[in-house]
Image (spheres, one colour):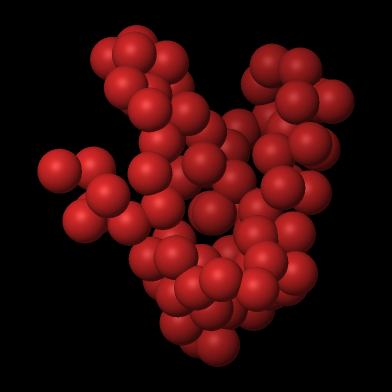
Length: 76
C-alpha cells in the first residue's frame, strides 16, 4: 500500500488485516497465508500486505458483482 489516498481508509484496512490475522477464529486461506508470512516477515509487514490483498479482493468483488465466499468449495 502506498501513502497516497485517504489515510483513514489505509488505517481501517490495516486494522482489518490485523484483526483477520490475530482475532478471527476460522482459518480461511487468506489467514493461513498471512500467518505463514508473519513468521518470516513480522506482523507489521504482513498486516500491510494482507491489507493490500483485502483491497484487491474487495475491488475485484465490487467490479464483478460477485458475492464473497469463505472457501473455494462454496463458490462453485
